[in-house]
Image (cartoon, rainbow, N blue to C red; front, side):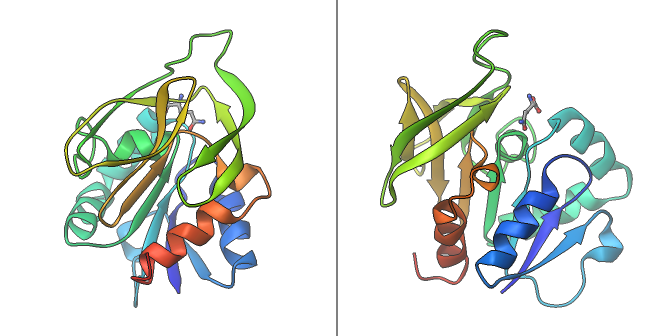
Length: 183
Ligand code: GLN
């Protein structure tokens, strides 16, 4: 499966490694010209959402991503990627992410918690958001400390944590199943 990985900034290489490990065929997208051939899915990595928004808007990539996702392209956003998918940014998922939501002291931490269908998985949070509001079509897949940290809406998956940093491929495997229509 050919998976586009937005590579403007942030943890894109770690996503590529994880996708390769699962037998997918990832490629980097920095500008609209990189968007070529068949694309089966898209990963929006963690990083700094404001920086990614600015860069993506410059060359028209923002609009392309918005159109493709709205047209049904499977997408997986982690951390800043979750923020990009929300109502105030790409406005493709019916979620509102709260940025840097855990405060300075608790901004980065690691835990193990259950995710629906996957059992207990490691979760690494780095100045992470959480989902503070969501619409009827959104399924909550994981909560941590009473906060919603993983959600799915049709073809769209978002986690507040970073599964690409933990060596556990289960969330990426789940995304590839979703992207192939098997989930
Ligand atoms: N704090 C970042 C933001 O607001 C997200 C952090 C991350 O992706 N690890 O965009």
